Length: 476
Image 1: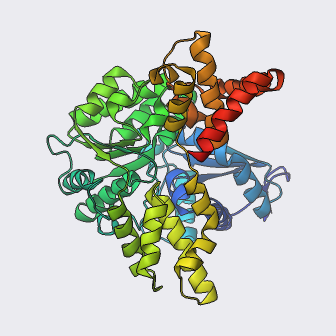
Image 2: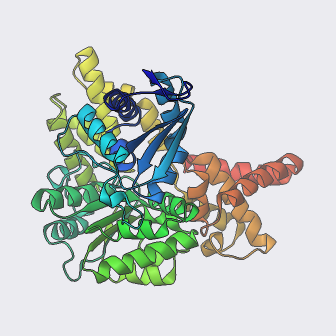
Image 3: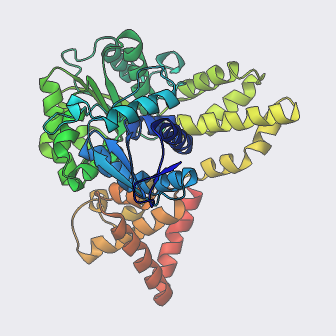
């Protein structure tokens, strides 16, 4: 290591600095994982060291602000491991030199560092940065069309998904809107579409993300004044897939941006695939224009599973597990666990794990013992809709009042009781309960729960009424 002209600042040669930078990047990649690294950090290059500060470059303001906010402290810590004299990391915007495919990390870092220290033409002011960023979430390798079990409840959605995968942007199927309850196969079909398109056309760019991630990226773009870059990146894809669109309800600005992104992609002949827990017409709180556009394509629902479909799923999963499973056990599970595919697979996986650990045959008695907690939960599982119906009957109000905007006491109090019982007797989250009561905020549910509990403490008659309802629901 040498000293600069005033003898105060350590200076490292370009090869040594490149090796340190390669180690920093390598450790950061291990920390965050390959997908996250590729999405946010791959385009970083090192400009050099100025005093006690490392200068890191990224191609866009959007990426700069995201890396500063989410990885700045970790970058500084990693640099201090390499060189304790470095106390700060400054992330700046500049066109970044990127390694060629297959280029070793240390060599790529050295090349990128050398080129940054001697700026290339595209680094000059006025040059347009490369904003190509992969925001797609990782795809589950198990979720393909080959592993999707087709039955009456999902055959239409499956056929629509295959048509889109084979011929993206075909008339009448754009957008494709898949809807249904939790664990019925919406995400499985979306991943299957993405895998099929990738295998058949490597030239098409596909971005799959949840609605929550879309919202998060948009908020970052607003805060960093990088909305144009956000628009350019998303509107440059060939296939945009948004999972769980219901999470955009109540987020007006994000809905507005999604609406314009939707129009731009459809207008350019690009494919859009969306999933939600309800049909477009039932997504109250979603912008009317957006609901209209989503409902104007192909809408396909996935119904609750039937016994035949559940048994087919269990047989297919069991046959691929390598564990012999008695047919009576599978039939028992198909009868007893009726909620969704995830619960069915979870029960089967537990039995397979038990068989592998103890080397015992899984009999009906063994299954009942191993799964007793799950079976007990399913025996007494209630839905929010059942609670609403029973409470409405008890208080002699209309079922629609549970989700209406009416605030009259004879309606509001039963609604609060239903929210209280939904929180106590189901595993649903506060936001989910709020959505089932006319898309109310989770704070409204919290208030209802605390208010009912308070009234029960001060009013013995009211407490007896609520406890009677609870006992009726528990034994129903």
